[in-house]
Length: 270
Image 1: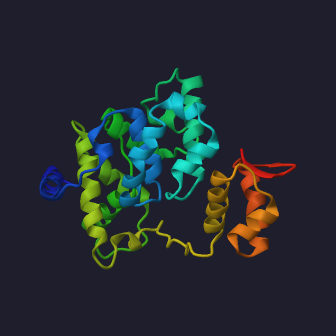
Image 2 (image 1 turned 180 degrees about the vertical axis):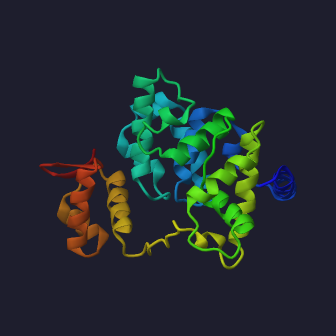
């Protein structure tokens, strides 16, 4: 990749961003806590659903101490509608770790961030780029789509290890925050094309149906227990009106994962 190729690519991406860049509330802040919340919410969830919940969550839990002190039941109640409830537990555990291990300040380097619950390498780097404007290198689904579309035409089974060096070579190190916004918005545009370039990725996986899945049953159980403080297994089965065996199986899993506690009178959120 020559310097001319890099400059041409950057011009193309910035031109699109100037004309079609998206606006989100988490792009209007540099608050590390706010950006952490948005990045955890955006894991496996579309931006329109996150937009509906992001400011509501911050109203209820405006900082690390308020989230740390909140009961998990209240956190899950506010989280309802986003799915993948493990992320809500992860956020609460992150708040506790930041207060106890980092004196209430979110660390600004990826190696420290990945030590926190629910934060992988890509999320850690995204936080560093968006909260601290650090020139880190990472991939997420929209960025991956851009590089596959432009640099791997006619190829299939493309590994991230082949894409990351190109991300590094084309990175605008003086303002990585805006550069990554521009890449993501260009990638979101490409998603509307057919076929989706990400289908050529070696890491592409089609999401399994939600209807009737364990994910749906788990969400239904947790939703019921954010309304009622305690419910017996029989009451949960009756309220959900679905296969009792599926309910029992997921009650056990939710206990193991720290969502629920079983007491003499029934189940409660931990």
